[in-house]
Length: 345
Image (cartoon, rainbow, N blue to C red; front, side, top):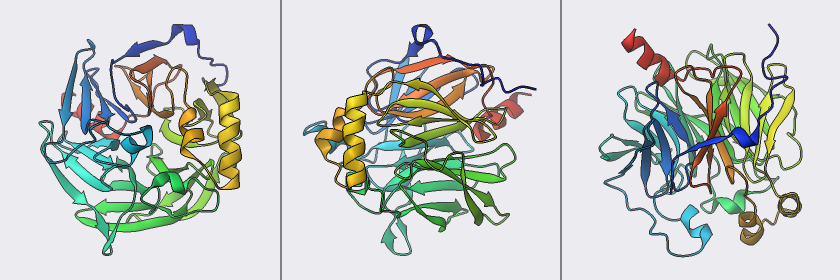
């Protein structure tokens, strides 16, 4: 069987959109009935029905950012749900990039902290959470630096992956360049780790007890110009789809590790300016926040949904709606999707 992605191209004029007036829809969860849930900067998640009807659920025990101040403030103060996953009972697991905590929120908004310290220290900038078939939570911490913008450097490798299993929270891999999203392959044999400032995807072999070993780079050692990868997702063929945040790219890595860019929405001059500062180790807010444009500015995540898992939704940090299109191949079902389908079988 030939790889369906090889000859696939995205027709931008055929893109459709769902959602309106969203705030920082960074991470998106899809359910089999067509419901979407997106992270929301107002301190919770936005429910978007297949009909387009929206309902926001906010954390009842967390104060959220009021919106005052400059653009950088909203990324540094108050609750800021970033990565999302469904708990087995349908509640929300939240990697909160603002409070630096792993949290659990019910569908009515009741919220509690699962973890905010590790070995007596603050855990750092909690970015993403992934639940596997054994009900273990894989949590990424991008950096231990409170102001994450100061961690946008090539010489800082303080990101790590922690495992939350039956109440125990421990580091299982460290030394990453701004750890971002993680995903497992279909057999849960490898954990794939996005290194945003490393410009690459790494993977590690998962041991039965949750330890990780045999770290290696998957695909190119550097994903090219404007290589700040952010979100990833597998399809059923084994292609790994991903986004590059500040350069606004949607890309795919084939099972062989070959790179194909499907969308490139970035402003070349602004991306170049940021890249120069990045490699000089002196990223400034004005140059950083000047980037971001196109169909999903600051493109942050990719999610497969729809009844056949062939609808691709793109999350973003600056967008107010969610673009989507049809894929030639279905996405790999997330664990919550498989559980929901098993219940209805």
